[in-house]
Amino acid sequence: MSKSRRKVIITCAITGAIHTPTMSDALPYAPEDIARQAIDAAEAGAAILHLHARHPTTGAVSIDPDHFMAFLPNIKRSTDAVINLSTGGSLTNTVAERIAPAKRVSPEMTSLNMGSMNFAMHPLADKYKVWKFDWEEAYLRNSDTYIFRNTFRDIAMVAKELGEGEGVKFEHECYDVGHLYNLKFCLDSGMFKTPVFIQFVLGILGGIGADLDNLVFMKRTADRLFGDAYRWSVLGAGAAQMDLAVAAAMMGGNVRVGLEDSLLISRGQLAASNAQQVAKIRQMLRDHGLEAASPAEAREMLSLKGAELTRF
Image 1 (tube, one colour):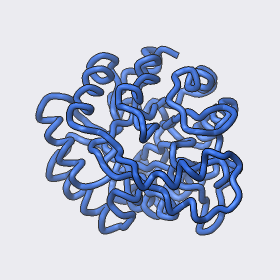
Image 2 (cartoon, rainbow, N blue to C red; image 1 turned 135 degrees about the vertical axis):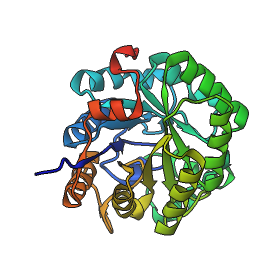
Image 3 (cartoon, rainbow, N blue to C red; image 1 turned 60 degrees about the horizontal axis):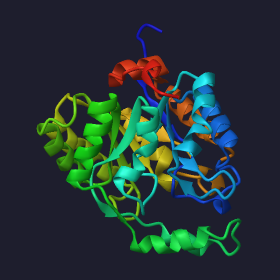
C-alpha cells in the first residue's frame, strides 16, 4: 500500500439506558457480562468503550458508583481501550447525581449532553407483551413524561468538576442543531479546551431524526461554528446505525456502534453481541479504504490524559 489509510475511531456503547433486558438476550446487565462484552468489543477494534451500569440482578438502569466498580477494574486489566463513562445514565436523577460515578473513578472521558430535551422511548413498549422484569414496561411507557435536564448551569458544573477538576475529556453529545450552538457558547465562555469531541446523536425521539440530510446539516453547522478545532463522530439510533456510521466515516468523521444505540446487526436481525457490531463496522471501514484507530491513536487524536491517571 503506497499510502496509509486514514484512521477512524470506533466507539462501542455497551449497554446504555434505553433498551431493556426483554428486548434482546444479548444486552448485558450483570457486571461480568458488561466486562466480557466490553473486552470483546475492544478486541474486535473499538478504541473507546462507552459505559453505563445496570443493577446486577434486575437489569435496571443504575448510576450507583459501586455498580460501575463491579466491572471497570476488570476491563482496565484486560484492555487498553479508552474508558468513557456516561453522565446521562438516568433521566430522572439530577446531574450532580449522574456524575457521581465519574467523580469517583476519574475516567479519561465522559459523555456530556449539551442541552435539555424531551427524551422518549415509550413507543418501544407496544412491541412486547411479556416482560422479563416488572420494572421494564412502566419505565418505557413513562418516558413520554421525561425531560432530560442539561441546563447551562448543569453543563458548567460538569465542566468544572470533571473537566477542570479531573482532566476528563468530554464526548459532547448533540441531539439537535441547537446543542451545537450551546457548545459554541460554552467554548467561547472558556469551559472547554479544543479540540472538542462532538457526538452527533441522530434518531432519538425528542431529537433530530436519523437522516443523511440531517447529518450533513449538523456537520456543516459544526464546521461553521468550530472550524478545525473539533473532532466528531456519529451515533445513529436503531436501524440507521450502520448506514450513518459509514456515511460519517466517508465524510471524515468517526463512528459509534453498540447495543446501547441499536440491538440490530442488520435490518430485522438482532445482534449477537457488541463485538459483532464492532467487527462489522470495522470491515465496512476497510472496504472503504479506512482503518480503525488504536486506543493509543485515539488518545493522541483527542488529547486524552491517559489511563494511568484514572482511579480504577
